[in-house]
Amino acid sequence: MKFFSIISICFKNLDELKYTSVSIGSQTCTDFEWIVVDGDSQDGTKDWLSRTNPSKWVSEKDNGIYDAMNKGIEMATGKYLIFMNSGDSFASSSVLEKTKKEVQVNGSPCFVYGDSIDISENNQEFYRKAKSHSKNWLGMITQHQAMFFKTKCVGQKRYSLNYPLSADYAFISEILVGLKEKDVLQLDFPICKFSMGGANEEFRFKAIKEDYSIREKIIKLSIITNLCLLSLHYIHASIKKINPASRFFRHSKQSIKFWFF
Image 1 (tube, rainbow, N blue to C red):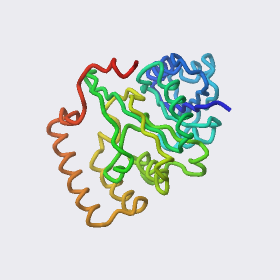
Image 2 (cartoon, rainbow, N blue to C red):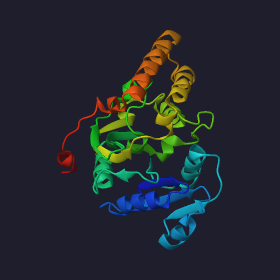
Image 3 (cartoon, helix red, strand yellow):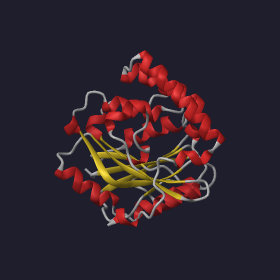
């Protein structure tokens, strides 16, 4: 059994998948399997995959991003799962090596997460410090690509297709429900580089409604607190629409080389 299962999903973006493959291939820790789930792309992806030959791959029609991610989980045999989808990359070549060491000395917790480097549309890099997992009720604590899930703890949990924009938040919330402090490990270094501007951000107001439902049904947040958060998130999203740069107010625009050593 490999220590990590790195799952990459893609659809009609071969160049971005190649970019991600370079990052994965540069890892100093090679104790992983690479699983690629392609949505039947007709842009040369299947030919490239047949020549590149990842550990496992499939190219077939699916029901969207989260259905593809569920297929990746079904194919995974590693001890820990991480999603590094086409266009994403690890923050440095030592991420898996450092993570494996931290996991082993901390009792192999169920959920492991760290910081991220968020990249704006004009390629500026902003350091995003992860929030405590205890604040998950407020929203995503870090980027999804900065999270490792112990396969055994995932069990039969899957991404819900009832949340086309926020299934990752629902999945994480389900994982965290019932976990004790010893079951969670927060790392103090960046795991991924993440390009801003995905579907969740593009359709943010719809995502906010899904988040409300997740807090109600999975996190069991009180209706008053949930309604207050709903209002605040609508205000926040409106501000970001007017001034996109406000997305990075909580980030640190600084040199990030320190974190790689």
